[in-house]
Amino acid sequence: MKMASTSNEQPWYTALLGFAENFRTSNPPNIRLCIHCLQSIFTFKPPPQIEARTHLQLGNILLTHTKNIDAARAHLEKAWSVSSSLSANDDVLFESASILSQLYEQQNQVQLAKPILHRAIEMSQQAPYWHCRLLFQLAQIFAIEKDFLSACGLLGVGAEFARTAQSDYTRMLFLLSKGMLLLIDKKMKDVDECLSMVSGLIETYQGSPIHKESLKVFFLVLQVCHYLMSGQVKSVKPALKQLQQSIQTITQIHTDDVLLSEPLSGNPVDLFQWLPKEHMCVLVYLVTVMHSMQAGYMDKAQKYTDKALMQIEKLKMLDCHPLLSSFQLMLLEHIVMCRLIMGNKSMAIQEIFQACHVCQQQPRLFTTHGAQIHTLLGLYAMSMNCMEAAEAQFKTASKLTTVSDLKSFVNLNLAIVYLRTNRQTELVGLLESIDPEKLESGSHSLKAAAYYVQGLQAFFQARYNEAKRYLRETLKMSNAEDLNRLTSCSLVLLGHIFLSLGNNREAMNMVTPAMQLAGKIPDVHVQLWASSLLKDLYRMCGDSHNEAEEFRMHSSFSQSLLKDHFQSSQMSEHGLIQWTDGQCPFHLCSTSVGSSSML
Image 1 (cartoon, rainbow, N blue to C red):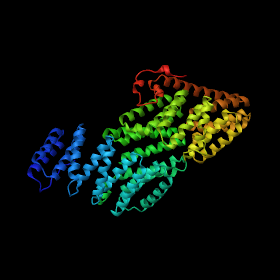
Image 2 (tube, rainbow, N blue to C red):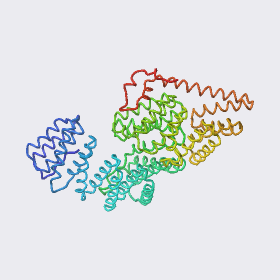
Image 3 (cartoon, rainbow, N blue to C red):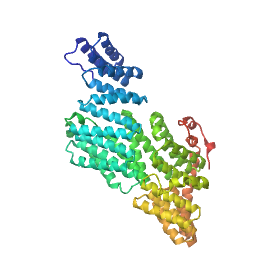
Image 4 (cartoon, rainbow, N blue to C red):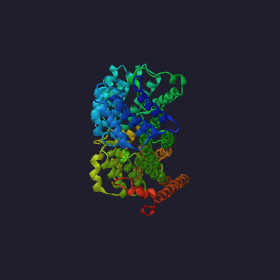
């Protein structure tokens, strides 16, 4: 914060401010003397405007350069108290309200922040930039509290204010922010209306190219997430391609010196930025990983995860923004699932442990991602055949979340645990919650997965015709949206059913494409299952050459999985599968827990 004075101020004030600024900007900065100079101003009993500004400057310096948060808070509170009692409203009033509210939020005291922001918003009608900034800030607090109705109301007020202030850019930022919250709140009809309106506004926007492209990226990210949340992996492809092209355009614009030297806008209401370009790049990598994971392109998901994590590490060296930790956590969640599908459990459990570390650095993240971490531990425990631990993890995840999609995903996996352990009573208790026709989630992919689980249940009970009916429904849905992994699982299970019925030809017609598709993903568990079936089918056909080849492949997959299974069971992180309550038990991962392995 630059410490400026005006020409009509007292010489002692100008001198002390100059000394403070000199100490602040010296190399290295002398913050102790800077603070001393600012504190000396109070000995002159300055007028209220100078008193408020000095308290704000001290609060900022203490927040930025020291760990004395209590003193910083006291100065900011005094700055707000003094400035809010004056007849003239200026930047000191609004900045102190904004920074003090941020501090209260960080200290989990949002109830103290809200009245300050409400009052500052009322007082800032004639200060357009601050009015918009404070509206965004209060809306964010309501969003964190999941009071989406209040948050969307404030964003709507902001959009209308920006329109009257003749700022199409900031109006669209408010509308897109509202669309984002509606998407989180699963108000899909309202999301469609909001995105449809913004699409037209972006198309006709005549402002700076950087503003236009950043709005496009925000819009396309929401559109892609809308599709992915609905499980529409094929339908999302045009929007995802547009998003990837748009981020390339932004990168090009930012490297163009001529454009960068031009002012973006003369309107003070336009002084907002959705995300820095570097954060946008990471976000585009993230949604690409999400799509690759759902579509069953594991190699692509790994490639973009590696790129994104490398970029995050570079950015964290410059500025450890909390958003980067959120991106990092979401990337780790997706790559863990990729590792498990590809049969790399040892890397999966290490990355789950990394996710726990990210939450330890940003404790608020465990509130929002704790259920996902326990879900991942449940999937890992399933892959390790630790069914009791898997059940406990899924039940913990279910308790921690209110998100219908995650609850459905957890229940579907819990049903598979009960099927594999022949626990009919518990399974019956889950059936209604995973009925594809009654599924709480509106996701296409989860509904298709629910049909698969029903088919699996019918297969275990030797109700083969019923199983075929469910699996054909899964195939129809998964083929419609390119859900490759679900397609391969359904094909191999249908092949198993036909083999059980003695229809070897149909079994071969199902298992062969399942094996090919599983190889492209690659899904090592489906490959293991399919190679076992093909080995038997070729033996029954008298094809000894292909039988030997499938036997070799089956042995190779089996040995690879067993080796990884043993390695995972010996790792200290394996002990995390016993954690179901409280904070992550990092101490469990400091010594070997090989004795807890289940081979």
